Length: 292
Image 1 (cartoon, rainbow, N blue to C red):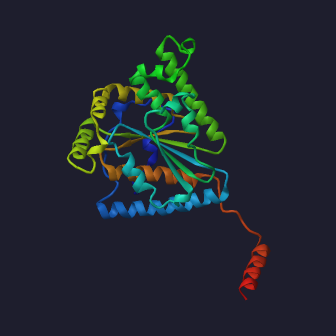
Image 2: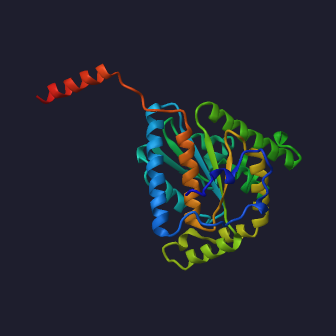
Image 3: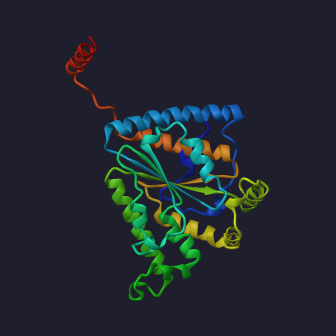
């Protein structure tokens, strides 16, 4: 992976993000399936070791946010990328449409409940960003959130600006408490997505994943792309950047995401706690005495 520089996919607010300038497919970072598997295994081993240090140190946790249109590869990437992580130190939270209880609280409430503990990696499969993506494409759903009408701005642009600010403050707060956030937008071409959706419908074991309402959402494709562009520009920061991942090729997608997460974990200022040699020696003697 000598040519894989994760910085080329990073957006941290220094420059404007234009979705039209970001390809959905690039030259592969692997030669064949065997090479892809080998590289992922190497990254998995590094990720596991880095997370072991983070867990033992006990000061940091990591939140990974995955956002994408349907069939962009979120689930398959999660399965492959985190296969080497200790499951007791890993948690995943998939988010669908808010339930009645969720709507009885503020829009960030249900996401607070699923944040990882220190020493753990938490993955959000979709996230609070749906509140400025799906809700922006379908603003009529705002009425379900029971926000007092007197508190809602008359201009929708003001509302989205407020929510962008709420999200940035939320993420800054987590960062300052030892929970950096890495956010991925899986950038897939509409035609490629269509092929994947058809493949689902032709597979009897996957047909249940798709419904008429899912296809209706495809009609709003340009609106979603604009929403993603505005969202990334408004919420990409140095501490909690976005990574826009070319996702027409899943193996490539997995290598890039795994590299970003591994590099971030390895960059954390953590280490294994040290035990005084004399104390360790005493403990060894105690064990031997117990077994004698």
